[in-house]
Image 1 (cartoon, rainbow, N blue to C red):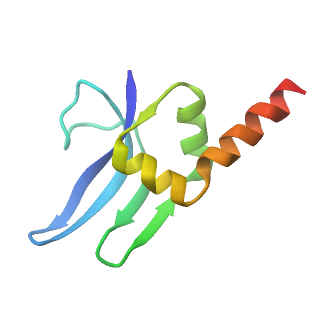
Image 2 (cartoon, rainbow, N blue to C red):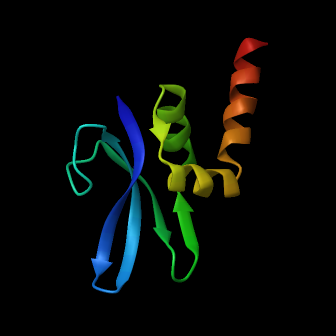
Length: 89
């Protein structure tokens, strides 16, 4: 199973995170399948590769709680819903 998870980067007391698609059995800093975004909580900046995120979400990847909140803030789930409704028509 694949999860969308935060991977810690940066230095001490100045953490930044990569949003990665990673196997659920891998540790936090383990080998990821693909980097799909970037999140800086101090500057409150987010950069996302939306097509890659939609690909993993369509394949059944589960976001963690924090990643879910980040994706909800930028309306990725609405795009996922619109893509699914277009495929049905």
